Image (cartoon, rainbow, N blue to C red; front, side):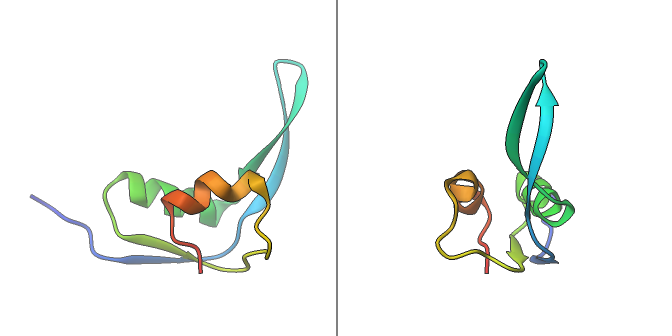
Length: 70
């Protein structure tokens, strides 16, 4: 079975403001974040390397539990 090697995604995350069902929503976003999440979902040992605010906003708490963010 194919097992992907470790992946280091360099970039950051953003706060996206989108309109869904005619109501504004705030959600985590950013190409680097989505790439790291997709790689983890595919089974890779992916990490996100980029600016990480301290303290980390609640918006990113679930994401940071899925992808190690350094």
